[in-house]
Amino acid sequence: MVGYALLIVIAVSLSVIVYAFLIRYVWRPPETCDEGVSLIVEDYNCDTTANLLNLTVKNQGRYSLDGFMIHGSNKTVKWFAMNQATESELNEEVLFEGDRLNASMSRNFLFDYTEHNSINRIEIKPLQAGKKLIVCENAIINQDVRGCD
Image (cartoon, rainbow, N blue to C red):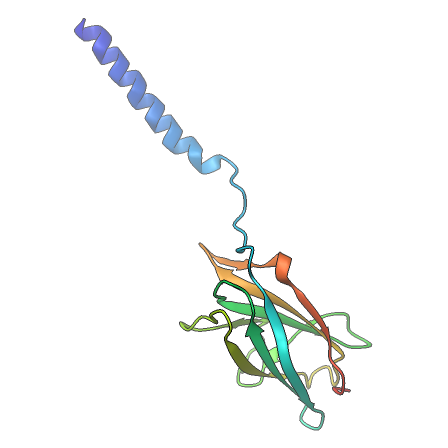
């Protein structure tokens, strides 16, 4: 009787160990953004002499955002990463350091497009933080920008 009980305990222990090992290799669906994510371009203007885009974005969704990715386009280059004017190195991600963009909030940013000399379209991809940054593919903005030639 003790032998049967010991055999069952060993079998259950082995199954738990195998489960813990194999669960790492099982496919899990990728993390996605919340359904109510919506970021809009509230206002923009261009300083064509300094090649600066002054952009105001507003979170019109129901959930907070942790940042966004921004790319520009012109007649010669399909998409290029845009850099904030205050940043020294090129980084297409604009992160709201420690201060998320909550629903109904707006924030202003300044981008430098000197390297490409003109811009006529921008693409903005909202970001939310999960285990890592998640690009909100269902809330991408494509906006024509006039007066930045």
